[in-house]
Length: 511
Image (cartoon, rainbow, N blue to C red; front, side, top):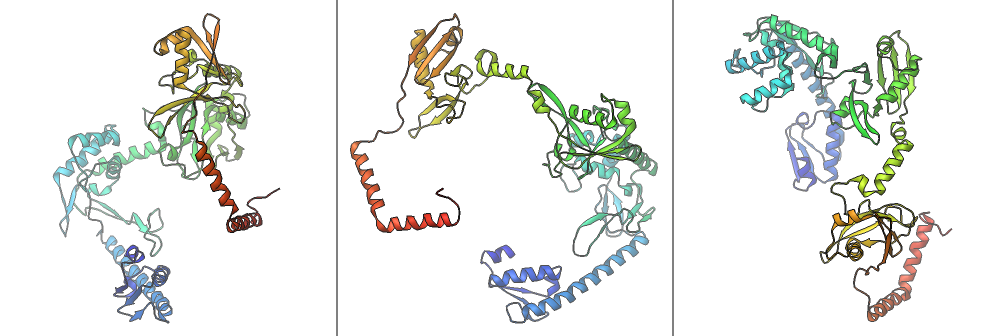
């Protein structure tokens, strides 16, 4: 409705009372003021108030406060009634997979109850929720709402005590009036456990066994899953912001693959809301060894001395020691820099310069890694362009910035023709060129072809300029237009004023 009002589709809004229009005084006044600015009138039938009248906002403020307190009182009365029902063993949740509410009692839906029993049996037999999810998908089983039966729904079923025929009430509550935000009840309010409130699907013994296994796995963390490769650092590195553990991953650096530890929230593809950095494993182990006062990282010593590590930012780590002390260290990774050893630099340099060493698949052009700049020694790269007439061309140019190396460019088609001329070919053949030549060097408009047998040959070239050449008539017409444009006193005055304004605002200085 508000969007329609903003779009000019509404002239007047009629409402029963203030309490039906907004949850609280702040929301009411903000909305009324926005609608007032749009020229839209709001009339409240019960209070007989017009929002566009002189005393409309004052009356709304007073009456909205009363309405808010009335709503709060009603809310408290409703909560009191619900809690009294909890004490009597009467719940307020009637949508549970495996049951249907008849209006008086829960009855078992046997088809769904069989699925519930299957989920519990699978878990007791060591089958994970993810595998059960795939099994249910293959069986064509749908959730309570008719959608996909997710592993999160399976985990909720595994901790739902109602399948034993009993019920735990007030597991959640709304903390602040009007907020609508639900919180888990961790002892802030009393809970009520009622027995034999409805027929059971599983036994209490089965349910308790599942809870014992869940608690044990929660304590073990990643160590509870035999398919996860664990180390001494597993479950020891915690994110201070989301309280999740850092997980191990690998990345490819120039000297090979390296192990890193990153926040589980970030690894799950949820961005980086915590703002924590990546921890290179070897760099982290060096820092831990420094904290423990040893030369090399030792798994047993680490497990004995360090309770856990908290990552508070991109470069700050807090070590919580087993003796209760706290050690803070700044983490600085030099892994990427250290990977570029002199040997690696030489190897990469050779690869970039030599077409044979690179063995590039799907290269930008057949000349990638083949052409060298005669001025700076850097290699050339291909840049594909589409001209206005639809013609596609590939220009080869030096990788060094033009300001540092004013080397000429050359079209791939031009270089193809030069290669054919040197090798005596009717048609360009990359394989023949690679067998005969080692590389070519371009300086200004001269190409030097260096053969594998040691000799070289030179060829010169001249690229045609793109576009249509200007005729003398076009050149004179453009010159005349510029003279007329700048000879106009009014235009010169406007330009002068604009330049003065720019200087006054210090956007540009003549100095």
